[in-house]
Image 1 (cartoon, rainbow, N blue to C red):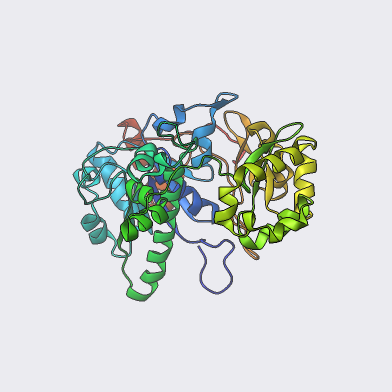
Image 2: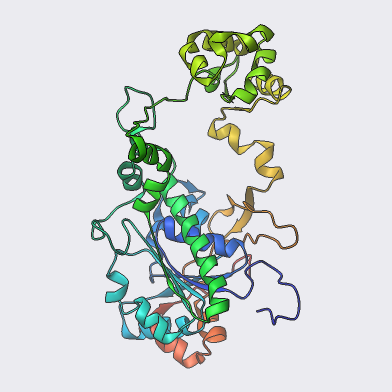
Length: 407
């Protein structure tokens, strides 16, 4: 821990988080803290977090588990026992943040509601992540990412006009909720410097579901405007086939229209009343679609993007997963990095999604179940060897003594 006499080695050096999260929205918030240099202790059951069993797998390792838990320490503990709860209480006393995403009321039944945490450590920040929030009309319901997409209206605007409600492939709501939790916790840590006290943070999937649809909801509440599905868009906001794939172009603004005319070799269209503004271009979209389709079909995807970029028109290849995985941007920017792994040998994880000019992002390997139990109990809490062994023998804690590359 930094003594305050010099610069921090990482942005969050000296911050300790207890991660009781499961699946994505909670653990991904804790992952962000780990990447920024906080010490994140993953509190899991003696058999390991259930998401360790989720697919897909890379040489026997869960790619799902690794993505949200690399760089954390593992404390395997049975919190259904009084002794296990005592260990967690001791950890709360020396930690900055406790994160949990059980159903509302569960953490209180376990004996770790915010009132208890505050009594143990008035500086503790508690992050509560749930489906519908700690209060509200639906707080007792269960839910996952797709519930947020459904409730907030996003599913009815995703896809093409005649499609049934469609969810995004990736868990958009989980991931944005995790960022809300991260931002809130960082703000609470800042406020703690002034007040000397922590506080509880409440974020939910439902809240996020409404915020991602905030503009259509605002338009409806203001003037009763009902936004309609557009699919990929049309007329300067669409995907077009090329000779070897697809290219996406988004250039609907009036400022970009002259560039599009130049690229289409139609300079006269800049003054054409059919295309004078976005509304008019939308009414004559068939003409635009035909010209754009003819332009790209004779080019490869790379040629199309290079050509459009020459006119400063926003465009990108519509990559498959295979193409995205080998895109030079991913590797040059260290978005995905390969780390050692006790199960797979090596595995790729999300790496440096934020670039600091002086301090690094930290991309550590994923712990085995209970890999850091002995270290945490001994070095952090000062438990004797005899006490640790007694807890282990009583199935209160589990530790993994197998060697790893990190050791």
